[in-house]
Amino acid sequence: RGDGYGSRGALIVLEGLDRSGKSSQCRMLLSYLEGLGHSAELWRFPDRSTSVGKMINEYLSDKSQLDDHTIHLLFSANRWEKRSLMETKLKMGTTLIIDRYSYSGVVFSSAKGLDFEWCKTPEIGLLAPDLVVYLDILPEKAAERAGYGGERYEQLEFQKKVSQCYKLLSDFSWEIIDACQSMEDVGKQIKEIVLDQVMACKKGKPLSNLWP
Ligand code: FDM
Ligand code: MG
Image 1 (cartoon, protein in one colour):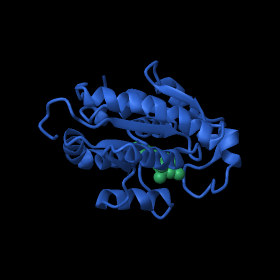
Image 2 (cartoon, rainbow, N blue to C red):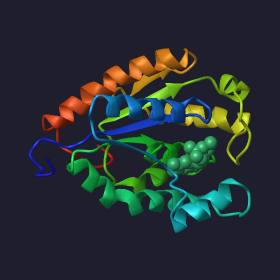
Image 3 (cartoon, rainbow, N blue to C red):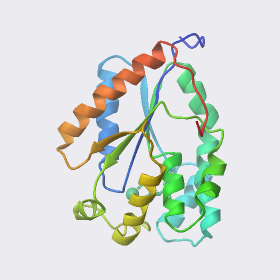
Image 4 (tube, rainbow, N blue to C red):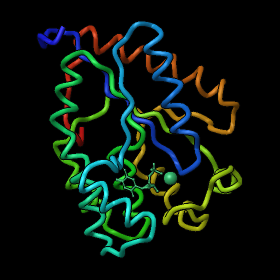
């Protein structure tokens, strides 16, 4: 409806270690919601298409070196540059499925040793998700999956630290799903909880900002 009276889309975030299956699940979720007739889009962070995103991409593919604080702020800036479009889409009634968000920002940087609270600060005021789905997998299991090891952070020892940082950041509101199940079983669980949120947002659940 786009009139701001109880018909907004839901902001759904998927988080997890590299190779936990987020991207596949995001795609399955998108076609599921579209199949039910909901307006939905799939976004991902980092969004490598913007000029900030291009700097991030160079860093991740080891083509540039940046100070840890600097890259942290670039990841955050990459979310800020999409914030107003995000709000517009949600208010127009489009559900956004997001592959990584502020949580990745905090855990990957704090896993390097940056101060946890410092890492959270630039995220203040970004839109808060209606639902965070965490695809839970042991770092060792993720490392066995195909395609692992291509980018800067895809190293077992580092992913173990990332996993611990996710555990520090997560709270009771997250939906934690065992990512070692079959893709279909993981998908089934995600669909149910996401649909609940989509309906709640349609009925007028208010939008809020980080950190709640
Ligand atoms: N990453 C991702 C961060 O370090 N900070 C962030 O804010 C975000 C969104 O970038 F290793 C890391 C996580 C991952 C890498 O992400 C690239 P994808 O999802 O593999 O493209
Ligand atoms: Mg990756």
